[in-house]
Length: 589
Image (cartoon, rainbow, N blue to C red):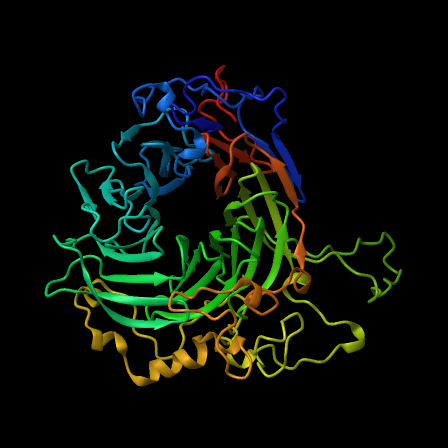
């Protein structure tokens, strides 16, 4: 894994530097050890990039016309891993990776070998791009590799643009390229996020600043005229439409979600649920195939900008303009905790699936075998076991790590009011820590076990298929009356209101919620009503706002709006190979 990289051309031209720039951190320590920034010790200041390489053409008639980092679309990073056939030479690479990185009007592609024999570790050469693309008249805003189909002979990539188009291209098959929404007849606003549907080779979703989410099929055309739609279903704050056409065409489906831009979305690990965060400050979780709303949460204030699922699909973490990270329980439909450590908007959140949960320390063994061990004092509070680790990166250029512990996830009532709860799945017994306004009778049932995957709600339609959406009809998607009853029973947000009233805040057709009326309900508990987490680590690691956070087996990858990528070696992984670690012109932020 490379130490760090600057996309060539990042920060070209003179830059005004602060008189005394704040020192950037190059390492931090957690319970498992020290994380260290790979590469040379010298650290170039913000301004001209130190990395050699071709310079991109100016974006305007002169250097003054080049937009600064704040005016560019957010820098994003996508990664795909390719399994290779057995190497002929022992110790050869068993894996190859590709990385896509956008900066301004350009896309940069990097590559590298993977782990093989002789204990070699993964390595990416982020010093020099293997390819780049320059776009005129529009800027790349987001991208996503198809990990499901990735192989040595095909690497499919989606790229969304600021003018609303979505490009499909193949890094191996150079002549394979398609442009969707080319004439901007489907949506004229910028693409905020693109994602392949899990384990599919043709279907993908694209969200826009209009608040619309479209389902595309790469094998279908878009049509020469603006699409016409028919309503399939609607609920609290969302509507779903099908494209009316005698022949299959894109988009297959159109979702209208909330108010304002739909900033980001993420599929659950099992691929059944879709979590969306919008500029209206709402997290909405849908069962994707049945198009039913499974749960909802409101930010403390402002829009939500990023979202991520826990590896087991039990929790969702969001970040946004309230400077907070919020942990929401999918099974219980409630806010579990908030985290306060950032001083500005939170741009990226991600769970760390490679940090093992902390084990409960064992009592030390005594030298004398006949001495009796005293029983533990029940009044002595033990250190809670860490169950989840996640990170966040923000506009304040700070990177935070957070631990979710058992005492936060499973709060216990005070001893004076302790009650014996028989059966964790009994919805009739109110669990401690859940706001009174949330009726457990209407919440989704608890999963059977800690490690079991969450099953779909009863009577949901079968799994998604290309043919199903390509030949969609209104009658087909309405389904039996039982499906509508299921929606009312499990997925309605009416359980949050009292005495059958409308949802708090008076949700309209697009689901606008009045924050003042929602505050203090299950949708948005007050600050003192849920645990407030403190960051395990909170370090300033860049001069420009952070936009990328990625957890890998051997390192953590971050990137900022300036176009600089940094990798942080995990404890015990300081020996990672670095392609440019010894370069005198280091590119670490």
